[in-house]
Length: 108
Image 1 (spheres, rainbow, N blue to C red):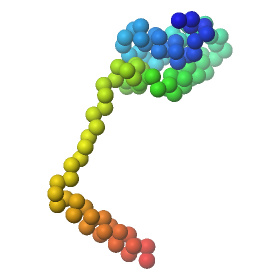
Image 2 (spheres, helix red, strand yellow):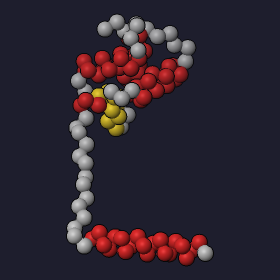
Image 3 (tube, helix red, strand yellow):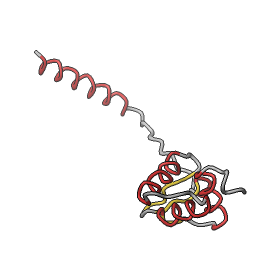
C-alpha cells in the first residue's frame, strides 16, 4: 500500500490488519500520521482529524478503554427475543388502556 496517497482510514485499517490486535487510539493515530508523512502544525489538531476519520469509518470498532480494532474481529451481536406467553398479551393490552385513561385524565 502506498501510504502517501491512501486515506488516513485506509492506513489505519492496514496497520490494524497487520498487527492483528486492538491498538490504543493515540498510538494508532500517531502511526498513521508518521506513515502518511503528514505535515503537522498542531499535533492535537492532526490527532483529532485522523481520529475523526477512523471514528466515522464503518470498518473500525471501538473495543473500549481507548482501543480500536476492526469490526470484522468483533463477535456477532446476540439478539434477544422476548416471547409473550399466552395470556400475557391480554394483560399488556389492559395495562396500555389503563395508561391511556390515566394520561387522558391528567390532560383534562
